[in-house]
Image (cartoon, rainbow, N blue to C red; front, top):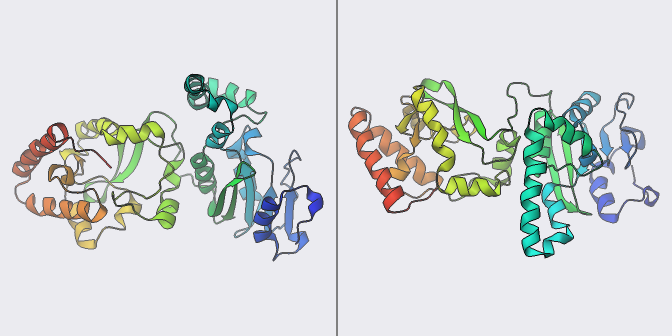
Length: 345
């Protein structure tokens, strides 16, 4: 199918869409232009569904993505667009006024980032923001798509001031885990003997970030810090909290519950656990994870290899004398963090 100029689309938009429509027939594409009704119930078997209605105008995005999933067959493509929160900020004229800009950002954060997360006021926010001003982060949009059964194929972040995405239906809606919005976040992690535990942390990422870890690692791999590279899921305040270990404080809840201890290997996700060498996996499962990782106490670098090496050293040393080793490492960790100023990556 060829996209004609009469569609009133810019050259860049047509170029993006043509990647997925050039090799299919016209009757295999469902196209919804801006401000047209997105009624998917009667589209039939389509290989490509294009909806250029701005997602910022949609009050019920989760319901919207669910309907798209139900309307498409496995392997079909879905293409859409959104103006992200960051893109809205960059396009404001008020950004040129330093003091006013900062004040506006504080007010905007309260109205657009906190208010929508409140149980009762959130519904009112969605209603009043239906005119296209609803704030959505890149993380939230892509994370929702993955949750609702799509695989991210391509993302173009700046086409006519919007983010365009192309995703492929690869399954049903994921219902095994509900997304969280609050400041306190429970992360599913592997505990002793392979038992699943939920580790408490202060939120440092945008909502729906938990659905994007595989996508981030598949595309960006690991940074020298041992954490996912170019991780756009992190918030600006989250970076500060992580640097000074503040996001780790709620893990004391897990210590009280007997799921973790003060010093020990990091509690990691199933996805990260798969990238750990088998012999370290075996050692890890014999002990509870800890709040303070060994690389901090041993004053090692935070690269992935260095972290794993420190963990292996700790696990072998503490195999028969865990209390003595843990006591010594807690002292060293305190010394490195407080006196030497060691910071998290």
